[in-house]
Length: 202
Image (cartoon, rainbow, N blue to C red; front, side):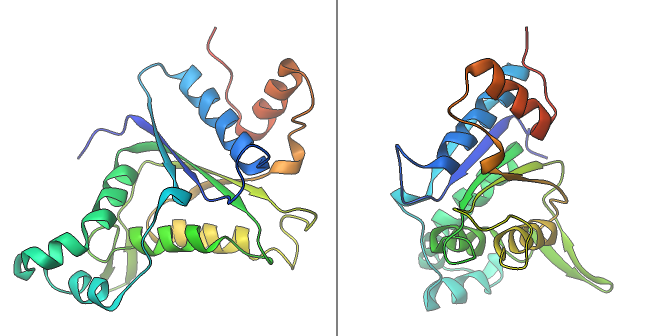
């Protein structure tokens, strides 16, 4: 098994400097890195590019690895890189702004790229089984007024479902509005402790 020694931060907001989800994912990632000096950061910004599923991708993905052509392997190369990042992660920090009650298309595309049969999940006689183990996930929902966990919030349930399907069951949903980014650092750190339960290293 590959060593799990990283914090994988996945951002999907189309906003940058003013993005609440980006600010909170950065704070959480910094806290995790401060607690364990052996961790490294993998910064995956989906706005720089993530592929959507194509007919060629589907054909390559459903071709047994022993029978794939070089062209099919190349089609799946970016997806495989994303999967490798996931398997290297001890912590997964996802920024998920809510667009029209759900997640951004870029984040959905990322989930499509990492949900790979025989790689991140498998089908057994008793049903599907996730293959991504030992990962703690923090999902930051910036809802812009929609109450996280309400009937209008389709983001939280979807993200938890997909993560659970691939084996990540330890998922904490964080309402970004609960972090007062205008407060001083000491207050922000106290708020982070309340939502992620980790103390900074001395």
